[in-house]
Image (cartoon, rainbow, N blue to C red; front, side):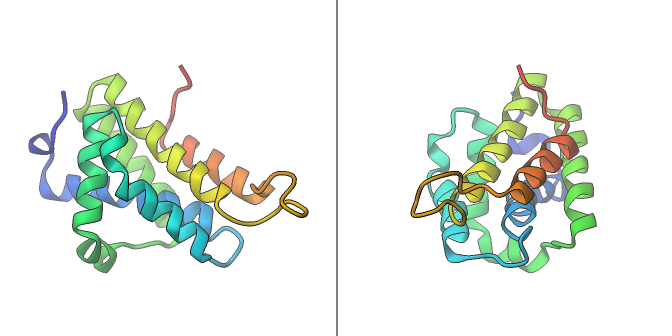
Length: 150
């Protein structure tokens, strides 16, 4: 089982960046990040204890606890996001079990989905709230992280 002790400080920071990169990839795809999207991410970080995968729980709880430090060093340019998520996938594939790695990647996609569903679309509250651009962003995240559907 992979734990925080299995990662260097730089590697752990890469894992901490992942939820923020995923958030940015989806929330900023339309050129603006709204409050509902920020609240969706905050909710996931606040409910980190509900994730079954210990590595996901530990990373998300550390994100919540070290939010200021993470935000100060986070880079969110589009090319950095997808490249960074690829590095996170490499790191997980090297240091975690295949199940832990895929669970972490799946948790990041869950965050992407929650952010995408947080605002936007639908006529009078009916219909999908997830835009085609957000769907494409989620697919890009899944591809960059090499998520495997079981």
